Length: 534
Image 1 (cartoon, rainbow, N blue to C red):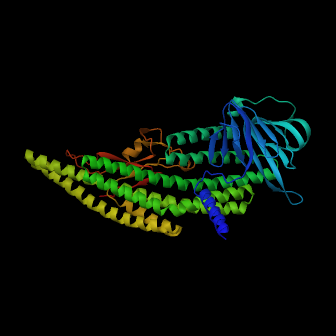
Image 2 (image 1 turned 90 degrees about the vertical axis):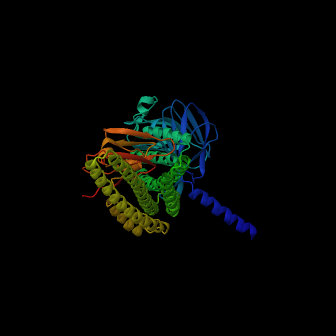
Image 3 (image 1 turned 120 degrees about the horizontal axis):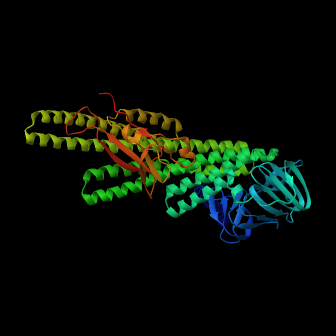
């Protein structure tokens, strides 16, 4: 009985470890690297690693990219794949439907370049394929290649059933220049670079975003295989593309949460720095930011866990070619993404209002000093103008404080709804926050940032408008206009910019059109709080 309980507990722990690690492969190894030279990488799930030693495992669906090197892979049944330089290969091994029941099928895809394959000792059905052809082998060895336009096949022994257009006979390696024109080779090369940079940085936000680049490889592969003449390959490509979309949604939830964690860490640093300077007001603002960010992280934990489970589910379903289960997992991932995105964006708006309100209060204090200076000079006209300016600023500070309290209250409602996975409530209250933020008598912009460098445009600093593109969330690249004038580089997390502007028609020495900028960390949303007409 004790042994049984132990085994059950062990199983739960194993499943749990899969669910909390998006990049973890859940597949059983089907092959290993038996020899290699030069530079090459393996993409497995949402992870990419360099080939550094023999014995490295390959799972179903893994891809290998070679640069100036070669890789030999040995399958469990002794089948061998020799991958030539500047080649991208995918290895799949699973059950597929046959005329009579099901059977294990191995598919080796050459997206670009050239490889040699020799069948193993098992009865596994082997297919060598490219984006435009499929060769079903029968106890044979052969070369297969692709140069973006044509497929090539050179058989040494055995026979093959061929679908699609293919050029038979000996052929040369397509080479580096051709490889670099391949969509899959391009995207996988970029993903490998981004993943390596993210790991080196040790930045959790960058590491999470890097997974989006890896998923882009799945999309590129699916697009290429949609051209294939084999119906099974077409279906696989379609399902894989859907699975990739689900993974994007799931990973986006992780990215959002990591960004909030980055805000917490940055705010805590700000607290220490403000304390060292004896700036109590700055300490209070930083503490409010840290508290709000921590509450948001906690409230989104359930949704993030749901998204991570969706990655596991969609991966299993895609390998089984089960489109319905892929769709179910996709819906789960999108629900989680929606909840986390809106909860985090709401928190970012609250933080922006907190910072902007503090900036406005600081302006009011500065205006009071101008009044005192004018009084000291005995300039009655200047005093009247300065006092009028102070009055306007104090009224705006009071209104800003009211808005701040309201959006903080609503944000807490959103967090509670997020904990319960109540999508409807989250969306409903998020809209209320957006409307209330517009009532604030300040102009606050939280600029979209999805790369290590946040770029603000000239328009963002003069009209307080920022633009977020869909590509910013799917390719982890923030796009700004050609008139970008300020780049804020950060090595710890992405940066969002909050611009607080108070505008009046006064021409006194208290310039209400001056702009002060405060930097808050890691936001991927855009919030614009328009000044109301006065």
